[in-house]
Amino acid sequence: MSEHTNKQFHSDLETTRSLFLQMGGVVEAMVQEGMEALSSGDLSLVDRVREREKDVNRLEVEIDELIGLLIARNQPTAIDLRLLLSVSKMLTDMERCGDEAEKIAKMARRLHESETPYVPVIELRHMASHVATMIRDALDSFAREDPVHAAMVVRNDKDVDKEWKASLRHVITYMIEDPRTISRSIDLIFIARSLERIGDHAKNMAERVIYMVRGDDVRHTGVKNTERTARGGVPDEENEI
Amino acid sequence: MSEHTNKQFHSDLETTRSLFLQMGGVVEAMVQEGMEALSSGDLSLVDRVREREKDVNRLEVEIDELIGLLIARNQPTAIDLRLLLSVSKMLTDMERCGDEAEKIAKMARRLHESETPYVPVIELRHMASHVATMIRDALDSFAREDPVHAAMVVRNDKDVDKEWKASLRHVITYMIEDPRTISRSIDLIFIARSLERIGDHAKNMAERVIYMVRGDDVRHTGVKNTERTARGGVPDEENEI
Image (cartoon, rainbow over all chains, first blue to last red; front, side, top):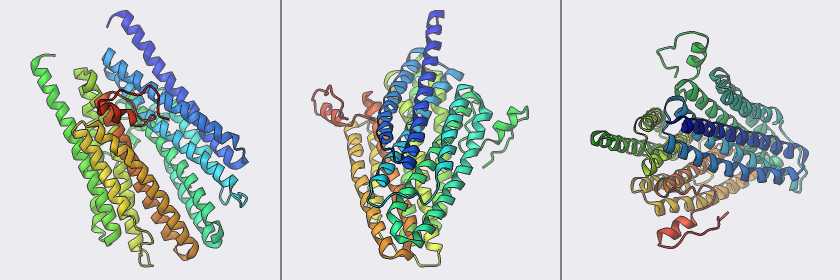
């Protein structure tokens, strides 16, 4: 690669990174606005989320195109290639987080427009702020190339799963006590489910960050080795499954 | 590329394709066995699905590794690169189909092991065979590099969405009529939801096949142009959103 091509390539890599971070910022806002629409009943937020979803789709296609172009043109290897392949995978998860946020916003509209006034039977704000933080932490670990921070996101997903199961039990109890709430309760279950999915996608992205920085595929092995070697330890031979 | 390297590269591409098709075959079997466990109560099938899930995870990691290696070593461009990038994305969808099938199998166990005998309140076999066919069609369109067949899978997803919504309405009616069924009905809702997700993943894979063969990203534009140009027409300038 000539010096000029090399410089251009590294500036294009930087563009890819910053476009992805921009996309992540939009998705994070969508999650917050979707939940805000649910709790406040401000339905202009629903329209805003739907607008943002188009931006997310546009960014997904644009970044994917750029990645294909950069690989074909510059034939990157090692960490540069891992960066591009990781962003390519993370894009899918990020776009799906946006989809889930849009589903939450649409549910919020339905709940607030129904004839029976919307009274929340369960509190989902904690879970929502938890998964929004996971998206932000996954983005931070990507921006700072920090596998230990990414490993924390992977671990956090277990708490989200617990919150999801607790919410589900809570809603089911409520439905059994007062069957008139069944329809609305099902909507709430889907909102909780969407939050749980967002947590899952954030975890997937964090796993890709670890792959990007370290070259280790931890998707089905856990993050113990990531944390151990970061503290100067030696990797464990055994998988952690 | 020397003739030898070139030959080796094309044989490696072939390996990638056939490993992915093998993974797809395993996932298709998982969906069928999960549903069979639900309808027959044969819980040995649940264990088989869980075993297969490990094979799927192993294949996912193995294929992804191969893809990274082939891109780094052989610096492919055009259709070869699109094949590798597409399989890389399809892998994720395929692995998640396997996850959903595993969830179905676990639900089947729960329903059949509960104290109240399991009586299906809704019929999900049609939807299940529909999405299993979508996986097979997505794989066929990939194996034959047939964008029109892939476009059909994308269209089929709308029918699955309709079936999902109808199932949901049906279960809700049932729960309201007989609140004692609430817990079990929620499990059925999740099974139907998993089937709907599998349909969605099959659609995503079909969209990637179109990208692989044609270089068109149809994820947010629809498949009308794919079908029109395949019949010898000219592509439409307008997006179909």
